[in-house]
Image 1: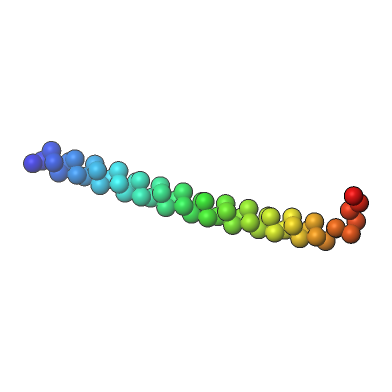
Image 2: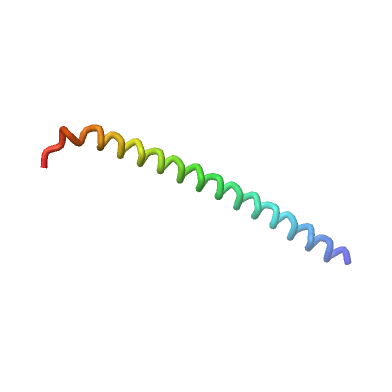
Length: 56
């Protein structure tokens, strides 16, 4: 019986750490995605602003 309790405690700790890691990875993915989107918008706006100076 005591062995089962220890097993469940270890399982609970592992699940808690896994859940926390998943939340951190999700937040970092969202931040990275937003940063890439903002950078793309800025670069696109710069290209549109200088399109009259481009020669083809």
